Image (cartoon, rainbow, N blue to C red; front, top):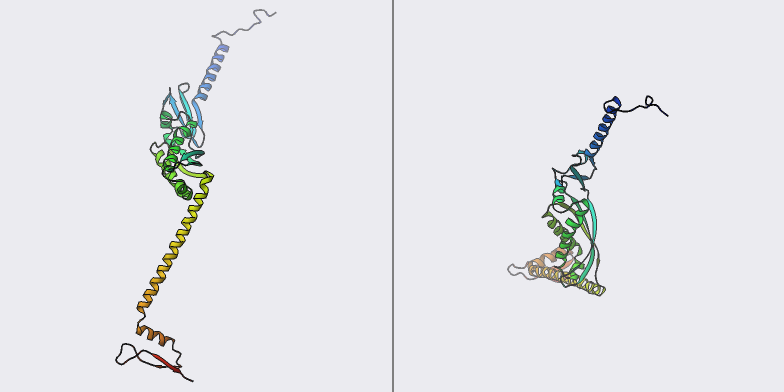
Length: 269
């Protein structure tokens, strides 16, 4: 059993108590510093809120500082995102089509704070709350203007129109920029495929017939022009150009007094 003289006690005012207090302060300072510093990865920005309110511009990639316990950090990706959207919509003639719209977009870095304040409380809310509604609205708006056969035959042109419509729709809010949109996997009812193929064949036949008519018209015009230019003098010149020098002719230049058309009377032996 230890005697009181052998037991050591730490008094608050002693040197040991001061050391403990210093270590406590250092530890608290380190904890506060860890809470104050944060790193924003490349390809992201961070929205900082002070007591729930957006504070300042979005923080850029790298080491950043915030007020511990008062400020919070909300990361948002500004990388290019690629999202496929399977959709079904009605055409002008009330036929159902199904396809996939793959949109490429990126959140505007300087708009992350505004997006957080108004519509997207986190990064995962950007697509369902900003992109998807505008995309589906544009798809419905464009496809409702065309009949099914037109959509099938002019798919590429309509895809371009959809991309432009989506970009215009999203530009109204200016949260994101659209980098591209691809439409693939068009699916239509089987009974309409034959009708579409027949329409395409008929259009090709009509185009071929129109081409043949144009060729015939040009040929007729050429012969008409040639016939109008073939007077006696031209024929006489053509004859002389082809004359072999052996055939006996009665020369006579058309258009001169007493002249008569060239007549072949025989050939030299």
